[in-house]
Length: 339
Ligand code: SF4
Ligand code: SF4
Image (cartoon, rainbow, N blue to C red):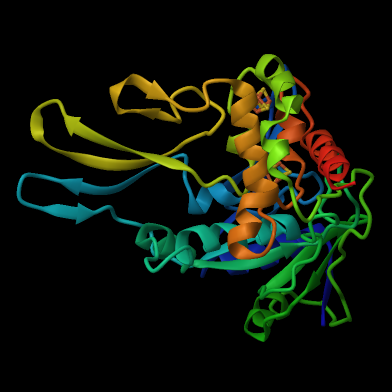
């Protein structure tokens, strides 16, 4: 059961929630997009409901709350280590099905990939409750249906969905009902979050990718086309790689801080090793690594695909390289080997 709200009602609900929660949601940043006068939709903390962008797909994913581009983990001196402070107030996190399914994958990497759980990820993860953004229609380059991430079957506090000037909200967790009930004149009605059932773009990933595809010359094209800018990694909700940086303070070289900084398998330096060596020097080799990690290697380890089909890598690539076109080529070559 839920409610149909006007924009003003919705703003009132958000005001009620802000008394108890910090809220992170997609926000439109004027003129911050890829081209002049183009907006960007990114995740940010909001202070009023009118800031939340419910209609457009966000350019950057929801992962930046859990995995900031740069995060100080702890401070150190010669004698002591002190964990960096974190705002412990609970967080409401607005995200679409694909992005919630992506967080399921980042949970897998940081919390269930071997015996140890990452405590710095865990302490952020423990703060958040989900608000599901319904998806009445597919966006350009989305292929979530092929990746089985078009629906969210997990827990959420309530859903929101913009339609014909109104916001439809399914209150899944009764403890949130009071935030809606405080708005006068609202009546309960039956609401189900919308989800996409078909995308224009489809991905047909073979069950088995033969070893010959790894050595195939299909990757050579990307050695010249890809300019290793790394944008595809930074927008991807399931890219989780990071590097560590120890920063020593200039006025006391024996004290400093350790930072976790996002890393990209497409940019120079990612595979550098001691002695001046570097694996995967060619951009085509990097592309092969990235693509097979997303549609094969992760599945071999955890039993489901890493890529959620959000299409952001295609949206952002300055060289118009299409991830789903690469999947098509991998599929075709895999089937040729089989037959
Ligand atoms: S965004 Fe495009 S050009 Fe940049 S690294 Fe990714 S595939 Fe290469
Ligand atoms: S690889 Fe591309 S389509 Fe798949 S989850 Fe990452 S950004 Fe989205």
